[in-house]
Every structure is written in C-alpha cells, then in structure tokens.
Image (cartoon, rainbow, N blue to C red; front, side, top):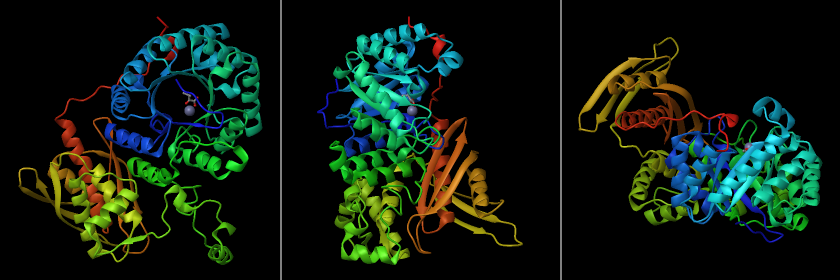
Length: 527
Ligand code: KIV
Ligand code: ZN
C-alpha cells in the first residue's frame, strides 16, 4: 500500500498505458519491457503497464512487466466491471508490489450518454468494483473518470464510497483537459476538506493537455495536498497528451524553494528515457519541447551567449547535465577504443550485452570512416539499432543501387542474402528511389506489407549526418515498426523496411494472438 511523507510526490508513470494508447505510440512486448526497465532506472514509483482486458497482447505485456520489473509498483487498468478487474488482477499478481486501477465515469454527460447509468448505479458499481479489486489486490486505485466535469457534491460522494470500499489511492482525472489551474486546485481542496477518510489515502492527479495546462494543473493540485502525479514521458497520450513527466519533475526540482516537494526521480535519466521512447515509438519531440527538446538548452542570441559565458545562471535555470544532456556532445573519434565506447553507451543509459556491444563497436568503426564528427546522438542511434533490430533475420541486405532524377523513371536493383546463404537479386521501378527499393524487396521476398508511415530524420547535424529511417507497416492486420540508421538514407530506409519484412516472415511462422474486442462497460455486470 502506498505511503508518502508529506513532502514526497509519488510519480505514477502511464507511458505504457495512456501514452501507448495514442496514435503513433504503440509498442510491442519487447519495447514495453525495455521502456519499463528504463522507467525503473529513472526512479518512477508506479508503472501503469497497460490495460489487460484490451487484448491478449496487452495482458501479456502487463504480466511480463509484473514478473520482470521489480522495484516500482506495477499497475494494471480496469473498467469497473468484474471481467476487467479479474483480468487486471491476474496480470499483475506476480509483481512484488501489484496495483489495480479501477475507473468509472462520473460526469453527467458520461452517465447519460456513454454509460446510461444513474447516480445511484454509479455509486453501487463503484462500491462493487473497488471491493472486488480489494478482494484480490491490497493496493487499489480508483478514478472517477471525467472528475473535473463532475458535479462536486456527486464527486465527493463517489470518492467517499470508493474509500469506504477500500481504495487506497484516489485519482481525480481531468480526462478531457478542461480544467484550469485554480479550478482544479479548488476541486482538490474541496475533496480534501469534505471527503471522510481521505487523509488515509493518497490523492492523485491525472491531467490531459488539451488546453496546454496539464503540467500547470498538476502542480496546482500538488499545492493543495495531492501527492501522486500521473504522467508520461514526453507527455505522450490521448489527443494533446498527458502531463509530461520530465516537466513536472523538473518544475518540482527547480522550484523546490516554492513547492518544498521532492520526488524519487533520478533526473539524469530524463533525457535518455525521453530519447529511448522516441526511438521506440518513432515519435520525436518538438525542438522547443521543455527539458528534452533539442533547443531546450541551446542559446542562440549573442547577448544570451555572452551572459552564459560570464555566468550560466544568467540565462539557465537548470543545468543540462541535471537532465542527462551532456554539454560536450562531441564524443568519440576514429581512434576511440571499445572501453571508451562502452563507457559512453553506459553514460547514455543503455545496457548492452557483450555481443551487442561488439556489434555496435563494429558499426561505430564503419561510421567513423564515413563521418568526421561523432556525437552522442550517433552513438545512441547505433545502440538503438542494435536493441531494436532483433528479429531472426531471414533476409539481409547485401547490395543495392538505385536511380532517380528529373525526367528519369526511378528504379532500383537489390541483392539480398537469404538465411540459407543464397543471394537473391531483382530490380523494379517505383514512384521514387525508396519506393523502387521497397518494391524490389517485396518481389524478392514474396512478402508484401502496407506502409502506413515512413520518416527520415538527421540524427545530428551536417551533410554527413547519419539518417534515421523509420517505417511503420501493416501486415495481416498488425502494425509493425522498424528503424535503421546509416549515413546513406536510402540504405537506412532499405534496412528498416527489410527489418519489417523479417518480422512479417517471423510472424508467418508463429501462432498469432487474436485480439478480443473491448467489452462495453455496461454490458459486463459486476457478477
Ligand atoms: O484520462 C482518464 O480519465 C484516464 C483514466 C482511465 C484515469 O486515463
Ligand atoms: Zn487519461
């Protein structure tokens, strides 16, 4: 059961649940496990690992995280019905510190149009749901969904019933990002003053960013006594996202003088964790994103640079090192050895096996021949490449050439190694050189996927920068993603696409998981 000193804020990370359910952020089991380990290293108190009823895949990832990631509380989400709750409890039961998070909408609009339930129905269902969860797991969180638009008297009643039924954490979601800081603070103050038994529980806040106020609202609630913040890395989440973990943590850290609150976060891992999530999902943060954006610590104006040189405090309220961004980005050169590379990779927050490190070292040597300056981001890209291109490779890129230009028909010729050692060659045309390369790969492998997203970005600066290609494709109704880096963007694209094909090939020979449909809340009674 959670306890907190009056000045310690519980960081509840929902990157793998609320974050993961937003478009473009889906992760497979290995990626979720990798993120969960990174979150543990970051020092989060609670990991909301998923929504087990949503699909067998979700269940499996929550269960794997519960079994493997020890330290933080591992939490599973459930709607307020028997089937969801039992499934969530089962998924987390092997965690040393399991939690079930039950939610039920309480606002008039949700009651009337979504649930078709009366106030009395909601109260009854709350008591039944929390009791059922408590019968299985000692640590139960309850969320009245859309709390910020719920009538205060009714919200008070629901929260009181949830506490009586055994909820240990009461979360007050601003589900649609409607609250503003003083309004949200008023709600928390009111609940703290009026709800019987609330002093025995942790008040939690969960804000969405539709008005750009998620962090502001969360901080306002902390001032009123909330002691758990639900947040996500890079602020990913439904629509405009959730409270950004790195922002709320650094606000508390930087303005300790004002809030007088602490967290258990090791802030040095904020940037590596943010980068890892971007690599895993392919969703980059905007350049001017607070704390982890590329410009967050860049000083461009001459007057600022001058001040910085005289005293960094003139224009900098946080040290980049405090969030894990190194000032001296230029790191390794052609003559750097394996030991220096290992040290750098560890500093960047990666833990590679000896075999993976050897492969990164080989790639690093090739890169050092092609590229003059090697930056942290280059090393990160090589490490990520190693961590994510993990499929059993049926096909490997042997050689390719492509032709494109104004007035010519884009074409490509590709040679691939097949697992049995045979080299297969073919050629094709396309809408452009990349399309032509993808078409040849389809022809050789006999596997066709539907590309849904394709992006290339420069990992660092300069015309010799490595390009990172990200491909998302659909195969037999499942989304597959892959990325690869190279100083040649066509090569990076071909490698990423081939990774997708390899995963599709592996999938063909594996039993497929069949997702279950979501069960509407009202159709599953609390039996
Ligand atoms: O935004 C929301 O209301 C939620 C709940 C499930 C807590 O994500
Ligand atoms: Zn939410």
